[in-house]
Length: 361
Image (cartoon, rainbow, N blue to C red; front, side, top):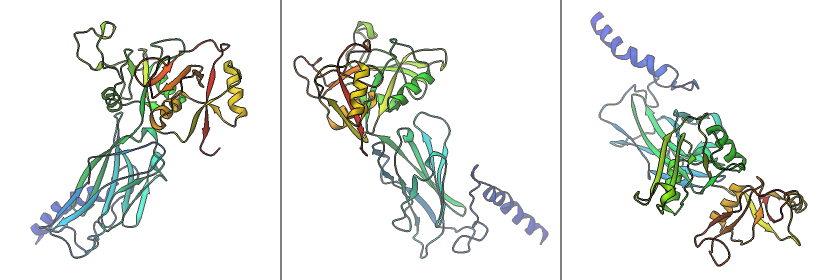
């Protein structure tokens, strides 16, 4: 009798201690385990829990909403509904640690960190564990893992969330190779963008991005995309591709940066002036029109996402002068579509201006 009790203790003791301890720092644990779940069973033999997603990746746009699919089922099928624990976690595209997004048990649900208030379970049917995400942010990209736990049974699946948008190279007003990694992060943020990931840069290279200056990426590496090999960019002997300097020192080394913009929650437009303007006059003109001078990321997003095409150079908020071309033509720069740059001319020089008016105005 005593030996039988010890064997039972050895079997259930460690497992119970593990599963009744907090699953993570949020202290949201599976209270129903020792109650035997909905069917009053601690485990069920001969039944397999399956978890799967309908697709390996989901694409969306910044500021919008999306649903990341996940469903679970049993083989053989069970006759009654069971209460399970659903946990969503996120591994950022830039790398780092996996963090909690949402945990749900039955009708009880809790979200965490920057996801708080922006995520919920869809629950269109009993086995639906899809994650609904609202007001997507530029740094929401990455791999999302859906884990379902039923007693001692568990399963998981992963889906990659990517945002549709545009990658653009950016340099300091003082010239090339001025940004540390932290400076690069701040520069992208100021232009309504975020640091591009390698996946985003690689996709842009496949779409024709050709840039010979090395720039920071979100993972701390420094790379640049080349579609037409040439002497200043590694020589003619190297094949086209994304060239990498590898991981660099985040404080000591200085480079340009590749930024990523995905959303445009307003309108970018060229303010037709009666005369060209200095930077100060351009700022005043946009304000009088109920707008503000557009940021570089906003101009690129308007060019990429809405097809903005204008062969007129105009001031932007950072003091640079640029113009967007979707239909290349004579006297409008190179034969490829793109955002042309005049660099950072003296603020007393005169140009037009690109204004940005938010959706609420």
